[in-house]
Length: 344
Image 1: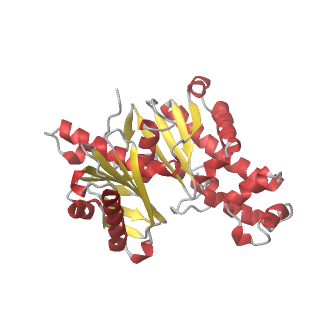
Image 2 (image 1 turned 180 degrees about the horizontal axis):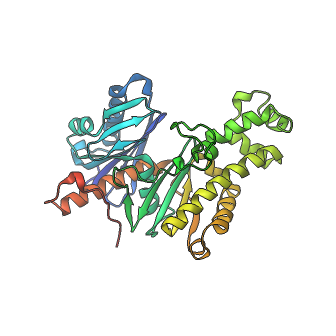
Image 3 (image 1 turned 180 degrees about the vertical axis):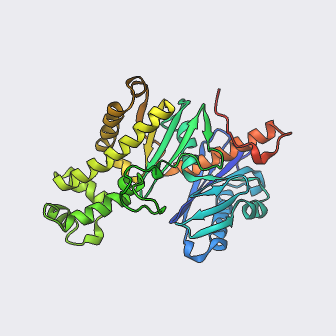
């Protein structure tokens, strides 16, 4: 059965392991979703082909043609250039200087808009999820790495070169652990799922870390952030200390942003955030301790609500808002129409 009279958009969430695409209506209600493996080792052309396959699957399954889709949005790891649609450097995809928006637009005949994956997830949580109604919000995803996106004055804020909001790469310890970005002591190197797992593996082979190794059945390579969280919940003191330290670093970073931007809300998602109260209670305590009292009092720190759908929904939101802006400002160069407007 076709979707008659609908105004449709497709959002594509491109990650290192999966491509998640969603077909939505003009109110950003999800009609259908599809997920496939990315398999980046096969190269950009193959990945783009799989992205196009998800678009075709969504339209065919729902009785509409690609021509009935008004625009497509893509959320992708960066750095990237939304104006040119080029992915500049995405290590998880093994991509450098890959043109992504143009081949997608050429194949579909539809406008295609590219943006950082954390930014589009921030947009989704602000428009549709836990951050709905917040005018000044930061979204943080704590998983393998740490990404973030900013909504300021109800608009997606991307900065001068489109790369604002890199909370994961704020330096927390001058001579701290080496980060994947090449810097030392980044928040990501101290509080991400990867950082938690690394510290747990180091602890597991030292006195006091026996409980973590036992939880991993003696296999140090099986230790990940989820196992550390389970061990901590079961009462292991070493695992609990690892989580406490990681989340205190996260709390200090959030407190700095609260002082800097006077946010209404901080929304935290990602796999590590699923540990729940231990993360949120720690972050709230550090924000109260380290932010100005008047600022800490006014900011809400809440879990994200859209889960794994945030990326694809946010990419669709981004496409809809970019297209609306360009249609409204038909006399302006679309390449600079990038300060998305939120609801009044």
